[in-house]
Figure 1: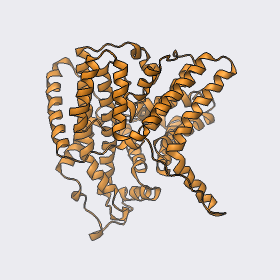
Figure 2: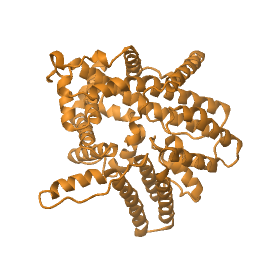
Figure 3: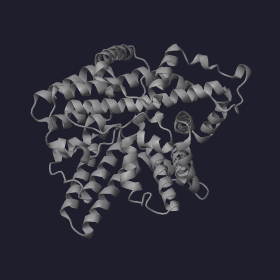
Figure 4: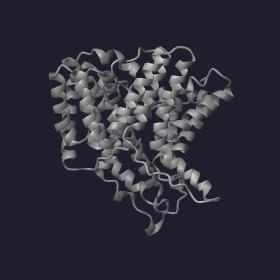
Length: 464
């Protein structure tokens, strides 16, 4: 079940909220509702989700009760169990293929089992790891109630696609939280903003992006290639940011304060700034639980560069078990190293629009690897962007076939909103609030019409 669906908007969410507000057992209602939400799409993996909750709950208890070396042993055991689960379900096929490629030269390949990727496993395993580390560091008190901990692990707003909500960020709200009319209305506004971002912008430009990336590079003209990556750049931003906003909005309706996950990343004027604005819950997770423990930037320049490279190699691998994701992570790691070495100081002296254009170009080139099916596909697509393809005459596919007026409008609006560095809509002055409310209600009506018509409604981050 996805948030941008008729079933969720008009059946699941209203029924769930009615029970949540009427019944006194808030955490139990949220846990049961979350398990039903997850079971709608992945019923066979509900036991895995509960096993993950039990594993991390038990490991947290043992860490909190232990002293000395055994405390660290329980931490490593818990982290290893989380990573083992992630490696098995997400990376067995990828690494197994690499092993078989080597073994084929000597003897027959190993028959690795076919594994289906559970929804949201990358998110809820990182949740568990951060909880165990925070308990070990004594930054938080261990959760003594399994029901409350399972509720935290399974909360449906952020379960399958984030943001990565750390236990420490909502620990005080797990035991006691208040929900008043003002907070519910704020949550509704944030939710409707995210819904509009997803349905009216991301879904509309997804069609041209998929069509143009689906063509062989030899059939792409330079304008078609640039339109394809422009559409995908807007799609992935508003697809994921829209989902994050919907999750944050529902969180407010339930009394939880989820962390912001996107802050106009395409307005960034360096790759360093981009990663302070893009998928903030993930980049801050890697910073706090990997980059800083490795020494961060408190070590020699060479070690700092190594730390950056390793973090973004793993960041790319976190997104998917494919060489395209690894290259995407290495690309961003290399750009960050170059900025830290010398380019960052120069970018700070460039005119703002020029620095922003440079950053956006680097991000868009990275998105080609993120979206392409294979590395040759990505390299061929980049070649087409810069006129090095072979598209000509009757072989070339005109981009007008896939890029109609609705897509043009969605791309233009998306670019305007994405590149704007001014005040965000939800932080606008009080004078604009009636206009904002009217616009959100109109957008909601358009979203419902679009979803009822069965328009294209993909979701990029479900596969992560």
